[in-house]
Length: 436
Figure 1 (cartoon, rainbow, N blue to C red):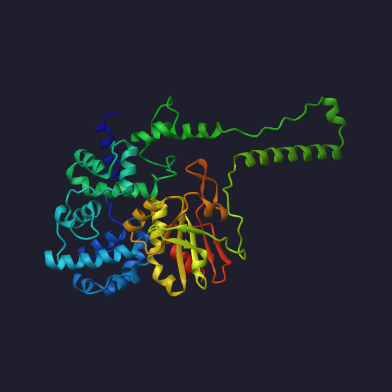
Figure 2: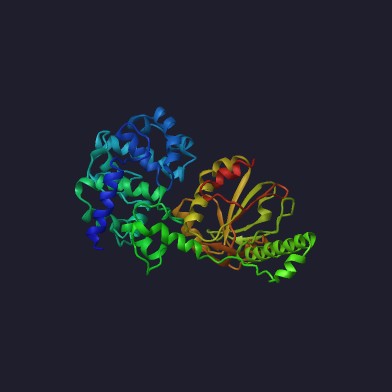
């Protein structure tokens, strides 16, 4: 199959079956759209649609938003990702609209990206949705789906954008952005793509190479048959029964027969349990419990200052352990705690982060995301091991030893009052506040 044929097949399917595709963000004018798209970065459209009605009601114009403070806007958007930075971006964006663009949303990509909080993806969304320009906004869904289908061979969003625009007819570019987003959001999922119900498998390189036996014919007509064969090929538990002569079978009593059947059922259950025990993975979890005295600790933070548990006598402490600076999950967790820091501080809480990274890495991480609390450099893992958060874990099917993401709430008397093992990185600050 040529690249041209692949594009034609995918586009023709969408043109026929999804002729109308548009953003799922709710808005009524260009100003509301750009606000919603800025807020939607690394956040779901569903969450944004819950937040924006009240925000749009109280700040319906660039003038009203520009006159507000970022602290005030933060209260409206605190449930979205990175609300502290986004609140600042919205206020600064509104001010620039008034100062440089007479309050009007610019139509050119080069002008849009000048606005605070507006990157190339956001600019492309605004240009295509508002002005119907052939602009291809590449978010995580578009990037993943286009690569999987084989429409692109891209390592960056910009490469993906350039390759898609090159082959998609100009009149379909703006709509194709929504086609790919919606397909990625509901069918071609990141971790568990729904290939068994996907209508695009005939043109999909990922399906052909990853989901179906490479020697099998590749077409929609035999997809279900192939998937059924794959399902039937899974190993089954087989319990062999002892053979008996016809004469012996006739002589066996009902009670004995019942006992034999019971033994067979028991052996089968034991065999299944043995398989489950071998295949089921259980991650390590700290042995420290609520009511335990918090282990003492001392380490340097990102500023080279020595921080000890004894320094916080009479204060509550949020002591959170995370795997590594600047990784996606750890960044979301840190920013969530940063955005709730003022509320935690008012409730007499100090926030301390701990990982095995050194002071230099901590400083770079804290400076980049404006973290107002200390990050302890536990390079020798003394604190990590004393709180028993080092152990076997699993990620993307890989089992290895590492820091188990865990948060301890320590009260004013130095006693552990809460242990959070199911950390919700995007809203960890709110998760902690809900416990109070």
